[in-house]
Image (cartoon, rainbow over all chains, first blue to last red; front, side):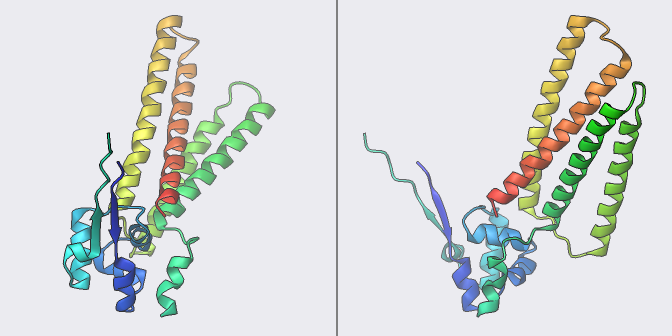
Length: 74
Length: 145
């Protein structure tokens, strides 16, 4: 029953030629945290998620996608 | 476009907090090694080790504060705080377990051997809890890197 949170930050950054450090500075986190979020190894808080969406000027669901867990068949 | 991905490929770059944790761990290892050497080569009744560790802790805190001020762009974000809370939780578990063991020992043996013995155990417990905290935080940083 594992749920996944995927994101498109890497693609959004690449489209804007933005480095991880530049994004990190804009949303007031470390570059390592941006890297962890991009790699789906850390789920950011709602506030940081909104900050990221605000930087790219896109809706939140365009940055983060929730993949619900598959229900177990009995 | 290549410069966008240059930094993310270089995973060896550590954050300020991670560097500080490594420095703390190395410091503790160095002191423990020295302590082992000291125990083997010195007679009873010397407590320089405790004083040495306190001096080292003070020096480390000073250096850390100096480095923080010097690099004013050091950011501590929510991930750092989350990892710090994980480390603190582990450290607290060790401390509570240790305190319970000390209380049981005390209950069992009355006045124990001496106050010095009790202080010694508490001191080692603090060092152990600190080491566990640092190692757990480093693991958490690596797992989410």
